[in-house]
Length: 353
Ligand SMILES: *[C@@H]1O[C@H](CO)[C@@H](O)[C@H](O)[C@H]1NC(C)=O
Ligand SMILES: *[C@@H]1O[C@H](CO)[C@@H](O)[C@H](O)[C@H]1NC(C)=O
Ligand SMILES: *[C@@H]1O[C@H](CO)[C@@H](O)[C@H](O)[C@H]1NC(C)=O
Ligand SMILES: *[C@@H]1O[C@H](CO)[C@@H](O)[C@H](O)[C@H]1NC(C)=O
Ligand SMILES: *[C@@H]1O[C@H](CO)[C@@H](O)[C@H](O)[C@H]1NC(C)=O
Image 1 (cartoon, helix red, strand yellow):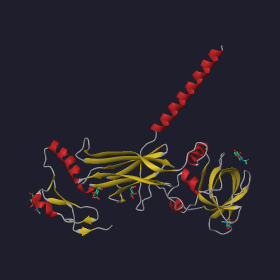
Image 2 (image 1 turned 30 degrees about the horizontal axis):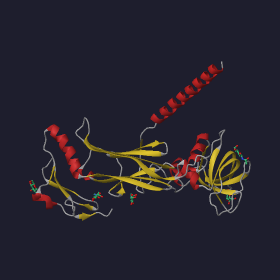
Image 3 (image 1 turned 180 degrees about the horizontal axis):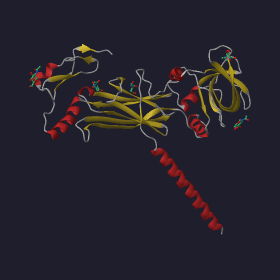
Image 4 (image 1 turned 135 degrees about the horizontal axis):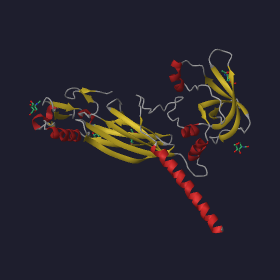
């Protein structure tokens, strides 16, 4: 009898483990590639909030002196028509306090009522896109579990400014804080490190007369890093032809860069840079003109057309400033592929932008 009970329990445990396993692997496969957007300033994927580069939940936690959960809040409207408002909140639990060792410890405990500001609401639809940049939240909707507030102290011990927008409380968010809090599980913030760097290289694209180029790189870190791409050391401009995507992994991120169709001017050094609050790491893929020409040649060999080739000694000196001379497929004339900082028909112009 004892034995049977034991077996039942074991079976139940195995069953639960199996269900959990299925659930997590289904979850993992659901993570899809998302487009990565880069602005001229290099922040990737809408990572700016309140002028900060890192606004993932763990970085918010690291950057805030005080993090707490509140179930009840009340809006204190200002008398003026500025649409600014403060909130009074009742602290449900303190998730992080202190921060700096030199400063006085914040005396906040469960149940205390504090004032949090200064928020701005009542924005028009047009203003809403700017709202994120300005660190002004929309109004908090009531919910059962409350919100997590990221705060910094002011001189007034009962008044705090928000360092990031409040977010809805979910218990799995607490587990994320655990990962960077150097707590029980001994997880501490760590600078990113590369776990994957695959130059899939330049290849004729299947089923088309185009050459494509792809690089995949991935890194881990605590908190998970953000990624951006550079070409020859400058921020890579993305468009319909040059596309970057990313996928979140546990504690990390994988990004792939795809260029299609490839032009000779795409030759150069491509760098993926991973950054979190702790530091930065990068890896570079180098693509030469020869590799692109080679892939094009494979394509044209199939089609029995004139291949492109690097100029012979007769016109080696055709290009200035170290540009590579190539004979074009279509007109049979020499063209120049210019190195970094040079442009123009024979790379005669300096391009400092
Ligand atoms: C919010 O509270 C602070 C501190 O009491 C105060 O200085 C500020 O004017 C308040 N803002 C609004 C919009 O009421
Ligand atoms: C505050 O509330 C949290 C969650 O309810 C609880 O875990 C914690 O022990 C409380 N702290 C104090 C000092 O009562
Ligand atoms: C790419 O990197 C290699 C090796 O560091 C360097 O020799 C080459 O000049 C670089 N190419 C460009 C276009 O910057
Ligand atoms: C890439 O890493 C190298 C070596 O750590 C560093 O010297 C360089 O500045 C980094 N480049 C970028 C763009 O972060
Ligand atoms: C380069 O070589 C091509 C083919 O041999 C020739 O037609 C062209 O005139 C040459 N151009 C220069 C600038 O030497």
